[in-house]
Image 1: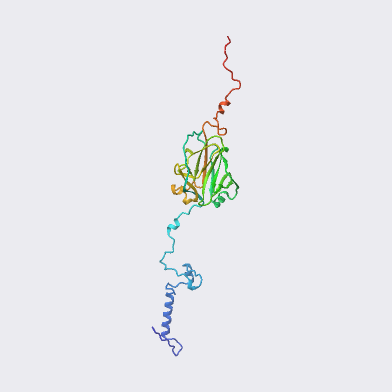
Image 2: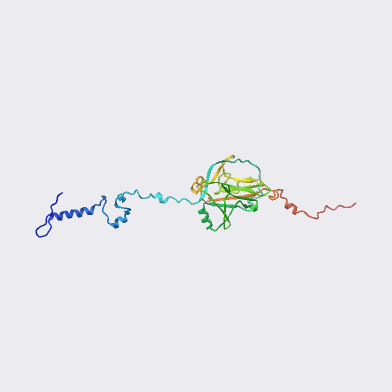
Length: 296
């Protein structure tokens, strides 16, 4: 549309100029360069239009009705994965087992239960408050009847001791085994749990369940949960979400701990390997005499 602008002789502008100025103001107040409603600096900042780089590289925001950039409500309800390590059901390993008879001397573990806590390094630091001392090799349990520890790679894992507790630092995706050495001269029954699950059947652990029999001076290497009489599923350090306890039972309360209970054999002295008849010997009398006979 053509608009002629002319100035009157008295110095005033004619109607044509006023009409053009009005159209310019209307157009300038309704549109911007990108076709969106024009916004002042304060409005642009509140809408998230923060420029980065030169004007040619500025990102154009979608219309107000487009919420494709907003996170879904499920994102905010998603639980945060529990940190640290647990144990997963790993690949199968050959491990044969047989059966034998064994009568426990009593239902209470000899010397009580013993435990090892494991985690990643950050988790062990948090659990100990970085106040610990370290040691190597197996450690005694059950009043010295056994020595035990966790083996990974070529040897027993380093022990971290703090406040009477024992910890080890695992390595993600690494296999490990539980090593138990019998120091006594008699057979012992050892019941072992990992993440609150019995190593023999992979179900919730209990002291009433039967364990492995370890012969005198024998070292037992428990490398996984028993899958059959010929195989075990290897123990593998893994995130808690991928642990056997979580995937099989939906339970993570007891992850990160290995338990050991040792039972002695009924009627056998574990240190001598002979029948336990001490109570009979202490009842013996040093001056026992046969019944008196009447002389003839």
